[in-house]
Length: 540
Ligand code: NOJ
Image 1: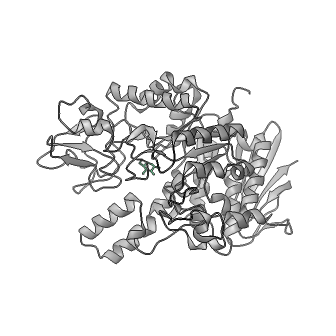
Image 2: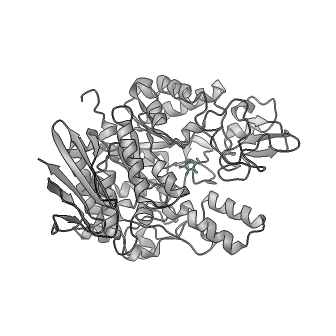
Image 3: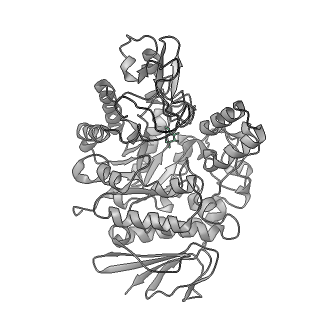
C-alpha cells in the first residue's frame, strides 16, 4: 500500500448494537451467538469491520456505557468463548471486529469506584474526581448530560464526585497516571485477545479545564461543553496511549469527540501526530438535533468538511447510530419515498471521503420507533429527563411528548429480520418494543427483492471498493439547483460525479457522464432527477 492508503480508510464498517441485533437464546436480548449466526448476511452485504457497542460487564444503566469490569462480558451477551468464536468467524471471512472503549467514566459499581467512595484516604480515591461543595451546593454549576447537575454528593465522605453522564457513570481522573496506566492495560489485553481496534467513547471529555471553572450562563446548572471538552491535556493523553499501545498493533481507532471541528479532527487524526486514525464527524447530526432538518445546511457542512480535511486528516462518517434518529426519518421520507431516500443516503455515505459506518437496519431502510408510554422507554437520558420535568411541575403528558420526540430509543428498536412475530428478532419478549412496520420493512423481504435497499447498499459498497477515487479522490462541488447535491470525486485522471436530489420534486439535471448506478430501476429521464433520485456517473 502506498503511503496514504490504509485498510481502515478502505473499510466499510457495520455498527452492531448487540442488545437489539439478534437473540439466539429467547431471553429477549440480542447476543453474541446471535451475531455469529448472522455473519453470512453481513459478509454478503460486503462490510469489512463490525463495531460492537459495549458488551462488557455492566449494570446497564446506560446500556453498557457503564462498565463494571473491563475484562469480563455481560453474561446476557454471552461468554468469552462466544466472543473468541465471533472473532475467529469474522477473521475467517476476512472481516474484523472493533469494540467500544469507554474510559471517560466507569460504572459506579466498578471495583475502583466502590473503593474510591469508601474513604478520602482510599488508594483509589484519586481515580475519580472528588471535590468539596461550595456554599452547601455542588462544586460548580456544570449540568450533566443525563442529570441536572454533573455532581453527586456522597454522604460517606462528605464530598461530591463528577459525572458528565448519569450519576451511575462517575468520570475517571485522567490526571492520575495510575488511571492512564490501567487504561493501557485494558487496551493491551483486548488487543492481545485479537480484536482489531476501538471506537473510543466520549474520548475528548477525558481532560477537563484546570480548576473546573463555572460554565458561563445564568441559573443553578448550566450545560456547556466549554470546560469538559478538549481540555488542555487531551492530545497528550492520546499520544501517550498511542505510543504505549496503539502504535504496536495494526488496528483501527476511531474517536467519538463531542463538538468536533475540522481543526480538532486534524489534530486528533493527522498521522504525524500519533493519536487516533479518525474521529467521527457529528456536525451534521448535531445540527439536525439542535436546529432541525435543513438540506442546505447538510450540504454546506459536508462540503466544508470534505474540502477542509482532504489530505490533512480522516473522519468516520455516519448518518445514524445508537444515539441518533434513523436517517430515513430525519432527512428522507418514511412513507412514499422510503426506499428511494434510504438508497440516496447509501449513495451519499459511500461516495464521500471518510470511513463509512452503517448502523444496523440502515441497510434495509429502518425508520424511527416511537412508544406509547414512558414505561416502554429505556434510554437513561429520556427517563431521567422525564422525571426531572415532572418533578419540576410539567404536566406528565406534555413532558412525555417532549422526551419522546428526542429519545435515543428511536434508533434502538430491534433489528427487523422478517415478518414473523417480533420481527424474527426473538422468540421471547423483546427488551424494547419492535417497530410495528416490521411487517413490511424487514431483511427477508429486502433479500427477496433485487431492487431493495439492501441490494442497493451491497452494490454501492462494491462500487466504492472497486473505485479508489470514491475513497481517496479529491472532492469537487458542482453548481446545481438548491434541491440537488452534486459533487465530483477525482483521482489519478478518473472522475466520478454524484448527483442527489434531496427533495420530493423532479429537478433538471444533466450529467456529461455515463451512469454507473442509480436508485431508480431504470434511467428513463436522462435530463432530470426524480424525487430522492441518486446517481453516480463516470465522467469520460
Ligand atoms: C456516547 C455513547 O454513544 C452514548 O450512548 C453514551 O450514553 C455516552 N457516550 C456515555 O458513555
